[in-house]
Length: 129
Image (cartoon, rainbow, N blue to C red; front, side):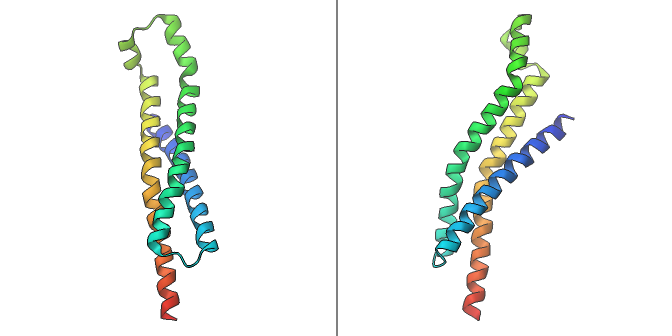
């Protein structure tokens, strides 16, 4: 069950990031069709870095909202710090946040490369015609 939750959370955050980068890059490409594929790739990183800031906030807010009631319960039960680190629910939320963060970070270069690759193909087709 924990793995399914991690996968679903990761896919949601990764797809949102990918769509945001792709739509931003496609807008840039449609407004400046003379961009080289390298410039498109660099613009993808620029757009991606801005999106990473908001996604990081989203992931942190998600983590704190999911664990906030749990921390109240842990505090009221008088858990020690080592008990908190051994709690399955806390570890599951930390792992979910960590895996989602890694996925979002990897989404930026992958999406930028895919848009770059598509733009390169389109440019090659135009030069062949």
